[in-house]
Length: 310
Ligand SMILES: Nc1ncnc2c1ncn2[C@@H]1O[C@H](COP(=O)(O)OP(=O)(O)OP(=O)(O)O)[C@@H](O)[C@H]1O
Ligand SMILES: *[C@@H]1O[C@H](CO)[C@@H](O)[C@H](O)[C@H]1NC(C)=O
Image 1 (cartoon, protein in one colour):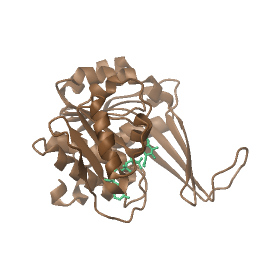
Image 2 (spheres, helix red, strand yellow; image 1 turned 180 degrees about the vertical axis):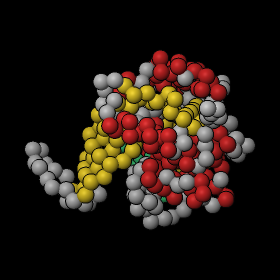
Image 3 (cartoon, protein in one colour; image 1 turned 45 degrees about the vertical axis):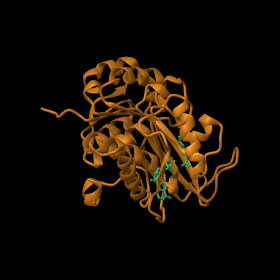
């Protein structure tokens, strides 16, 4: 079968989210009875890939699943989303990455992540996908998979596609990620953790953006939830604030992933747009996603978007 070249390539994680809704969070040693249970497809890599695919991007994912029912189910789901899965491998004798989540009535949550097969994503996986990586217009990376594989792919793509590094979760295993990315992208809490300064207000965001540029990031995007995002680039270093529409959020989980998938889509399919306009549109897509429940289930499809966002 003839498959078209994916313009967006994601190197990252797949996780199964098992979400239990309980009256409150359990104490140590306590067994609580919950009210509701939901299983979802997650992992920042797969989430961002699906978000881009739903907007109409031709995408490929480079990832690892476990050799269990979850892994086989996830592979089917990715294919159904139109994601190219030739480089998503099932890892023998490993389990699929799992996120066990308890959500209390007050909205607080507790999460245990077991990376499982995600830990097996390696430099050889990246080398097998060399041609796909080198041909991509945009590449997306997060920090839920081994940094060695990420660095290998960043190197292959250097000077070819635009490389977006989403430093989530904020455990930076190699400072080369600052300088080896074309766009470094994080949320406010991750910025706080990496810089050890408060990032709450837009003013804080400006300062944080400047600090990331000092660390060698050629472009930095900091998302600020309902306050939108901050952008600063080498060509236009004065930090710039992009506001978002005021809405009543239903569920903000996955907002960051919706934002990153949308960024990748716009950069790959509308490269003539300014980065400011791209961030603006990606914010609008993420704002749509916070108005529906769930993670991947909240990502909009192309046919649900107004023409101005296509
Ligand atoms: N309450 C909100 N109202 C409007 N837009 C929002 C809201 N929360 C998030 N967004 C949109 O989503 C983008 C990313 O949000 P945020 O900074 O919260 O990402 P995140 O923290 O990585 O998401 P997550 O909740 O998945 O961890 C924002 O820049 C904004 O465009
Ligand atoms: C930022 O992202 C991290 C995951 O890296 C998440 O735990 C945190 O809740 C996010 N912050 C906000 C304000 O949403």
